[in-house]
Amino acid sequence: MFPIRRLVALAVLSVLPSVARALPAQEQGKGGGLVVRVLTPKFRTIEEMMTVVQPLLSDEGSILIQTRPRSLTVKDRESVIERIARAVAAADLPPRALGLSVSLLRAGPGHGSEKGRKETPQMAAVGERIKKLFSFESYTVIESVNFLGIEGNGAGFPMGKDFRLDFRLDRSLDNSTARLKDLVLSRLREEGKKPGWKDLLRTSINVPIGQPFVLGVGKDESATGALFLVFVASDAPPGPGIGGVR
Image (cartoon, rainbow, N blue to C red; front, side, top):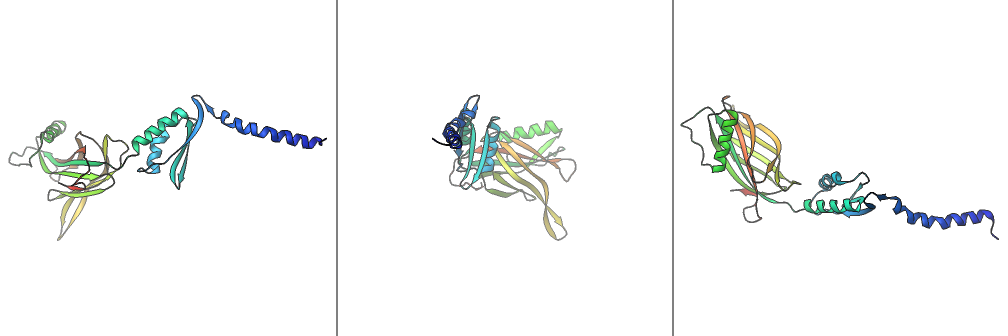
């Protein structure tokens, strides 16, 4: 016959396996049991994937970040996990090749003798809209540049003889926009004998694909007019010419 103390110990040990098996049942959510899935992005950073996953979690969900290998361990209801997996697959894409048309406009009082560069019908419509919105009598296209690039790369080019535009074509989680990060428009200043560049604008913007995006720069030096940047972004298939001005 076993001592009473040993019988109690055996009884506890015999119960432990059934408790371990019952633990998943205690994690039941309203839409079913909680499940775990490891998501390993190929092209996006963990921080970018966090912005996709976190808003989709239920109140019962959680995320564990692992740096090696870089991955997200997501725990939530199965229906939520499936929705998160689809969102991650849609966002985890290679860098896009994008086309970008940029025009620098000067709007102000009427200048009948001033002639700008040849413009597209779309740009003409934008110019007319700027005139109406800001009560300007005329506008001139100082420079227009067409650029082909890949997300993640930087770009910089002159806009006429007195202006320069620099930016980084950043990764965007929304394929309906092109993100221009650290965008700087600067103007050449003649200060004494040594010329220098002065920043007129420093910002980051999201440009809708296929739609003109107008960005007001500020007053021109004449104090009677203003400068505007007009962006038109488009999807561009990879090929020769990507990563430069044309």
